[in-house]
Length: 345
Image (cartoon, rainbow, N blue to C red; front, side, top):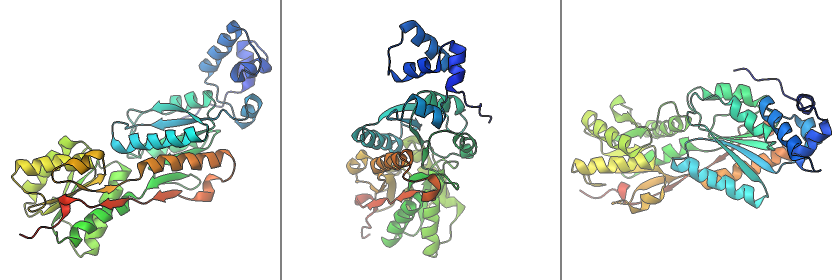
């Protein structure tokens, strides 16, 4: 992926045939500029994809008090609630947001989105995109050249980057350990999509708990969904056909767990008497299923708030990305309800 050389404020002035101070006044509003000139300058800004470097930003404005958000997957509980936390913290600190959505995070080209945010003079960017497959390779090449700081969400970090995340591995470990502690021994997994980093970490936690309990893992114990209830339902049917001795299942999100509960009912299996089910997320519906769903609660609103706090510290020069290593890791919590409580047979 190639990154264009930064366009300067002088380039904009030259193309628009106005002075540098006029471009500055258009962008900052410090002094009045005619509507015709303003339109002319903004047209050139868009055409050139003006991305001011730190020096140019200082000439134009010390701070826009604006944060750029690059996000995807807002149809899912976690990303949508994380965005709520971002908005709450940013608003309380006097920052506005510019939201850019990526609809195909595994493959979509990010350069136009990055150029758009820089053109709008954001002070920093929160990269709220899940790590899927190798998509961080080309994001990394783009982000390392940006003139503004970036905080990553839900990513494995590389040296010099700063991220905040929830300990998905620990969450998977907690779910499986809870089932083992309640006497369940044949624990299946309905995993999230294999290329998702979060799904990989939740699976790793499940595997670790079983290994520490001396339980060998059989490939029949594992099925994969796509985060939807429909995929959880189908995965449960597949597991019961291949692994009929299964007495519990950990689903990597609550939507798939709810689908699994529906499938169990269709098979006339009682929950938890015949099979226990644990989810991940603690969506509002989890407390209203029958039986109520045991799940791993993610502090997703807190994750969004923390990302803004970290970014503002970077903007203020209070820390550098390398100072924080992999960044902050928030801990999930287990919410025990009826769907996983061992009942005497």
